[in-house]
Image (cartoon, rainbow, N blue to C red; front, side, top):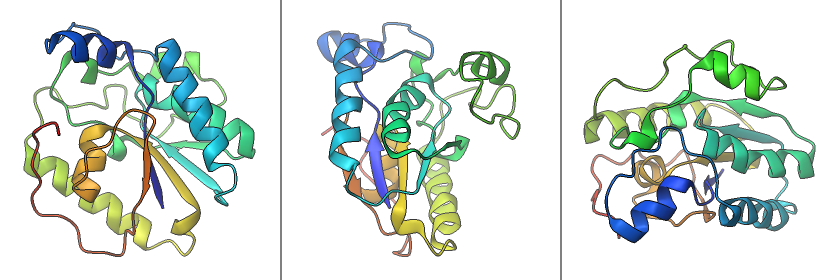
Length: 185
């Protein structure tokens, strides 16, 4: 499968400049983030993707949209691939608000409040990534799946730190990671 980190968000823009949490809840993509999403859609067009799975965060849904549109495939929303809850940006939008903004997507399986109430311990993120890895490896066609996720989730899946709009391949049949370095590389 392919893991794609969402495009630059308003949070990423401000945090990279100040290294301080700017207090933005469920941030949207910046113009650069939208351009990164479009570039990813173009780059991934020839990859044979038949399924797009995205985190319920707005920045991930906005990144998945041009890929799904270009490829003519649906976006499946899955809270398992959400970001590690550590900053204000990791407070999501309630499922009812997401339904209103994204009426063509199915949120019936997403709890109204689907993000944790407090910082998520590293071992819980690794366990969530292992669970998702197990679910994906059970599918025969996992290799044609694109997962639009976040820095912390991709790190928990691969041990690699990736920039906004960057993608990499991941074989879910490989063993799950038991530890990673959470320092931003």
